[in-house]
Length: 83
Image (cartoon, rainbow, N blue to C red; front, side, top):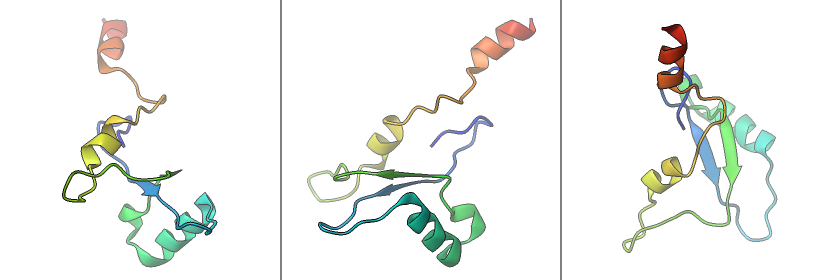
């Protein structure tokens, strides 16, 4: 997921098993306990399924492309305002 500082931050896309319930706090708590701090997601999105190709691999580019962060600052707008 893009970040204001021209970097990417971690976002978790979660598909729960049928009949299971899970919330964002549960996912984040699990990640804090089991992952290095820089790998802990800043956002969690629950989905019915993940996009996959014909061989079953997750299409990460489609997940990235589908996300637009409202907090992002358009670099061109910032440069024009400075001039």
